Length: 352
Image (cartoon, rainbow, N blue to C red; front, side):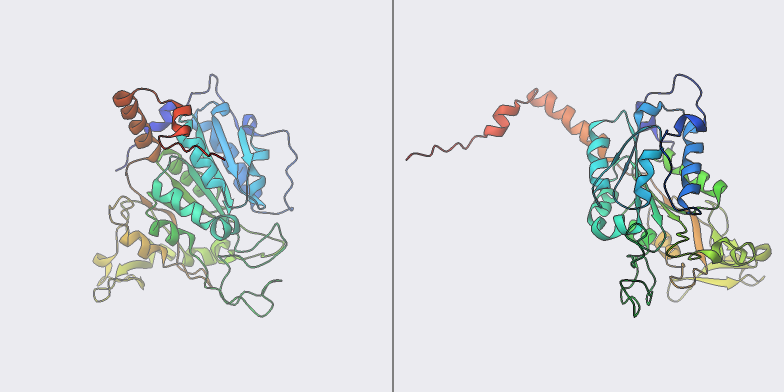
C-alpha cells in the first residue's frame, strides 16, 4: 500500500491551529446561485486545516472557466492563469519550489479541450501536484456550448442538432496516461468529497480527482441520477480498497469479470456468483482493472458509475528525480555558469 506523501514534510507546518475561516479570502464569491462550485469550495476550505500546512506555502493555480475563479476565494497564494495551461505552470512551480503544496483547479473544457496535452503530460510525469477537475459536461463561463465531456447528441447553442463528438471519460483518460492516482467524487457528497481530497493530498505524485459538478444554469440535473437518494442507491458504485464491489439495495448488485472476454459486468448477486464478485484493489500495479472499472460509467444515463479512488500506486515522482539529477550534476561538474551556457561552444562571428 502506498505510504503517506513524504513530500508533504518539505512544506512548512502552520505555527498555530487553523480553521476553515483561515482559508476564506475577503473576495466576494461570484458564481451563479445554486452552482455546485460553492459546495466544492466549502469542502476544500474545510479540509485545508487538516493538512496542518502553513497557508503561505499552499498554492492554487487555475486556467480559464467558472471553476478557475477558485484561487480568488482561497486565502492562500494562487494564480488565475492561461486557458488550459494550469498543469504546465503548476509543473514549473512544483518542481522549482518543493516547499509548496500545489493544487490545480480546472474544468472539463479547460482541461480536456485546449489543455488536453498539458494535462496528460503532467499525469505521465507524475509531478507532485493535485488536480481537481470540475466536470459539469458543459461550457458554463461562455454560456452553454457543448464540452469534451458532453454526451453524444447533446443539444446546445453550439450544437443545435446534437453533438457529433464522442465524449471523453476523464478518469479513463487519466488512467490511460499512466496517472498514479485517479479518483472520482460528487460535489454534493461532502463526506465522500473530503475523504477523496484527503487521499489525494496524501499521495506522492500527481493526483487527479474528477468532481461531478452541477451547472444549474446551462446543464441542470446532469448528475441527478447520482444525487437522488433512491436512484443513487442503484446507480452509484462506491469503491473501497479491499472490499467487494457491490452496490444497490443491501448489496444486491455486484461487479464480476466475464471469463470469456475479461471485461467487467454488473450482475445481480446470487449465491452462485457471490464468489466471483471482484474485490477492489486500488494499489494493483497494472492499470487494467482500474481502466475497466472506469468504463462502467454510462455516458448517457450515468447508471453504474464508480466513485472513489480507482487507482493509487507508487512510482517515481518527477520533482524528486529532477532534484536528484541536479544534485548529481553539481557533484560531478560544480555549479554551472549561466552566461557560458547561453553563449554555448559554437560561436559565430558575422563579418560584413
